[in-house]
Each structure stands twice: as C-alpha cells, then as structure tokens.
Length: 250
Picture 1 (cartoon, rainbow, N blue to C red):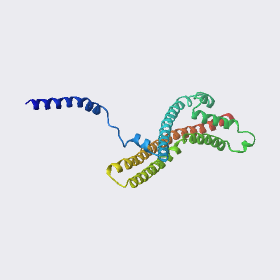
Picture 2: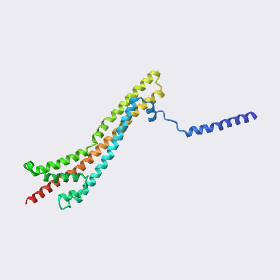
Picture 3: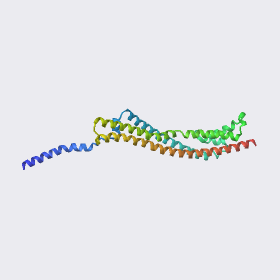
Picture 4: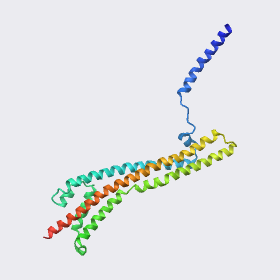
C-alpha cells in the first residue's frame, strides 16, 4: 500500500507541475503557419510586389467610390437648390448669383449669359440660337468629363485585378513545386502551406475586383441621373435666354 501511495503522490506532483504549462499553452493561440502573415514573410520580391499592387488597387478603388459618391450627392443637393433659387429669380443674372460659386448649375448659367454677351462682331454671323446651344453644350460636356473622372480606374481594376491575383497564384505554385522537387517528397504538410498561400492571391484578386466592378456600375448609374438633371437645366436655360433676348429686341 505504501508503494501505491508513493506512486499516486508522484503522479499528483507531476500533474501539478504540468498544469501551469498546459494552461499557458491553452491561453496562447497557435500561430497560423498558412495565413497572410506567413505569406508575406515567406514570399519573394515578385509575390510582395503583387500583394502591394493589389493593396494599391483596393485602396484606390474605395477612395474613388467614396469621393465620387459624395460628389454625386452634392450635385443632387445643388440641383434642388437650383430648382428653388434660380427659376424664382427676376433675371437670369440674379438667378445665377443666387447659386453657389462652385455649383455646376452656376457654371452653366454663367456660360449661357456669357454667350449672349459675346454674340457680337463675327459671332453675329452665327445664329443666336445655335451659339447659345453650343456654349451651353460645351459647359455640360465639361461637367460630364469631370464626373467621369476616376471611373476608368475602377474599370481597369475590375478587369485586371483577377489576373494580377492569378499571376501571384501561378508564381506561388511554381515556387511550391520547386520546393517539393528539391525536398524530394510531396507530403500533405509540405504541399498544403505553399499551395494554400498561393491560392490566397486568387482570393485577394477577386476581393479587389468585385467591389470595383460593383462600384463602377453603381457610380455610372448615379452619374446618368445627375447628368440628366444637368441637361434638363441647360435646356430650360437655353429657352429662357432666347426669350429674354427676344424681349430686349422688342
């Protein structure tokens, strides 16, 4: 019995010593050998360059989507202000002065007013209707060009990011197969890490491309709605300027 008690006491002592070590091991999460951190640390210059390109693409896409969304919302507010302030003014000049200085509707109104003022000299050979139409259309085209800014970047990211990620995948798999050939064995522990890290590149490429494509389509649709309001304002202004000029001639 004494031997049994001594062995039990020894086992209890060993268990007491092992418990703190086991608790510490359980408290510390095991490091993931196949995650993004491992991919970055174990990759070469080419793989790091691919990751950097994808990061730049993603950051640029989200920046453009946020900025263009705010710009479009601002133009919608300016369209409502133009409908309230401009058309209730006594003259076109007063209506233009009632608009914000940076408003595209103020820009179109100033272009129309300037067209009527500059219809002198050789320009008098051009019909006033055509001259005002051309001046307002130039202003509308300038606004449309500004609204298109950044959309080409989104389209480029949406169409090229998957292939950038695929290039990173092919490059990673190439290095994985090279390492397997050097090691002379293809066990699951040697294949899973490199191949999994390579496939992360494809996932990152899709994660960059999908928001860019969705954001591009969304912004294009919103741009169309904003530009419809701008063109409608330009058409109404054109008619008002012609009537105002006819009234002066009488």
